[in-house]
Image (tube, rainbow, N blue to C red; front, side, top):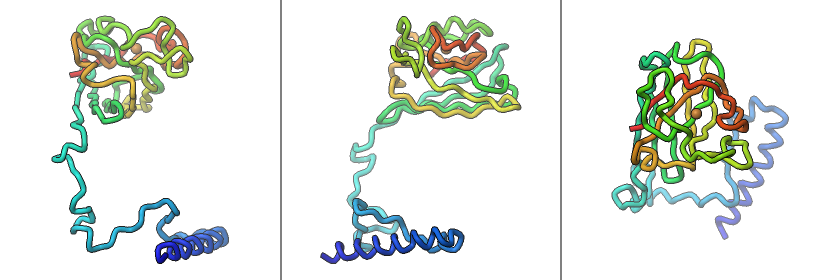
Length: 215
Ligand SMILES: [Cu+2]
């Protein structure tokens, strides 16, 4: 009963504050109470918390609750085989996180298609055909916006800044790190142009301009 009254009280306070915020947004900002909603968990009594505000019995990695997240990397090389940066891959519980950091001068400014290709081989420098087709290649299936797709190797485009550097993070539920490194491996390929996520077979993205073997 006490918590019910408290919730009702905070709802009224929120409602009152909202109208204040509309009238004088600058002044109301500092007085905004913590967002309390009816389905929010009740606050934990202080005596149940340790000094870091955690429940003493909260399960942790040692209890096997959180899966081990495998990590992968790829050294990215450009058209002349020069190092341009690196990729990091993290195999999370719900999918694969991919992050790239590329140095200035790595790419032409603008959007570029980027895919996971089915063979971990960047040895044909400047061509990068040895990396094969997309992971999960399907006839007519390329493209994140393709009703017949996507292929497992399809990813959102990467953007290169005016100085040719790029930062990128993407998440896919279509791949796992263990599958990517199995057998003959996989590679991250960056294309000359952007992927329209629809046109076959590679979204009109053109030549391959950078490559990195996933390890
Ligand atoms: Cu590609």
